[in-house]
Length: 490
Image (cartoon, rainbow, N blue to C red; front, side, top):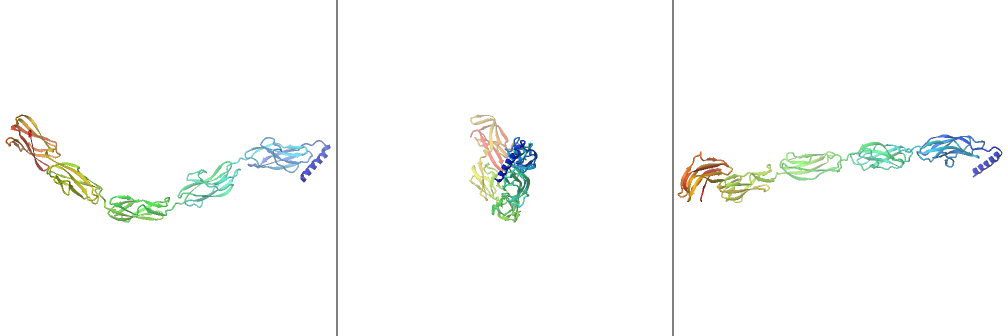
């Protein structure tokens, strides 16, 4: 209040003193180039060169974002009269063009200096570095950053971000560690053991987010704490295999390698958990972790290799009476410990079988020969049909002859065909007069008879004049002797 009173008195006195003189003019001055420009402040000033004999009431600088700023815009007020002065521009907007003029006021009014311009600095993203990684464990680590310059924009968020790929961003894992510039510490958590991570410090201001240099590190391995096996006891057959499974704790342990061993390789061997039976007996299979040497055991009993089935060399056969046939049984697997087989016939009156599978046909009919394994009672069956010789050896007539009241007159032949799978030996041929039952033709000539192979046909006959003659063949087949005959009218 006292200052205002003094200025009012001064103006009144000045007006009285100069009332008789020439009318005064506003001060003359110049504007100093703007310096120390930042984002929101700058420094300028002026030089009052002439006050026209009247005291300077106020001086300073004024500025605006439009040309020719006046004291009605933003301004400073500085004390003093003639000479230079300096003023600080404040509360500016970053990256903005301003117009500045110095001003001075006396009783005549306000004078302005020349206009100068400047542009405030542009706010940029902060400058920072990433702190080295420390305190590494299986699941945690420590890092941080150092923000050395906020570039005109207040840091509103800072921390570190990380991931398993290079160049992690805020879209990955991150910490939030306060605001502002300077050094800060970050705790990195929820990591996976024995894993490589990439870390960058970050800082955010009004412009955006920027990142520090990237640092990589690897978390400590996850140690094994124990091992169990899927089975503590098992049986396997000789010459078979079974896989044992080792379960490592924890399940995410880094080194899950296991060393396998057998207490007796003559009974059972083991390769990466696959146990193979060698001979009948009992062994202990041990699995030992490479990390920590934890171990677990499984007792393995090797038992005889079991029979799984049986087959015969034939599922059916046709035999003649007194004919024999060898059945052969094949037991699966062939290296089973007990491949013994028992044999039986469903009807020993038709065919018999001995302990070796040797079958003998007894009489015409059908029968099943059964082979049964002692181990497992698996069975295989061969169906045997005991058939007459005519099922294997066929007879037909041929020639040129006449039939008169049962008498055959002319050239008449008997054809014999071997329909079996084996050769037969023809030993004799006869033509008999059925009326007198006397042999009229007989041949034992080997050149006419002899071997008749499977599928072959021979014929013998004669010019005859006989009553309904009988044509009779004698032969051996499969070691047995047979007689077969036929006549045109039975």
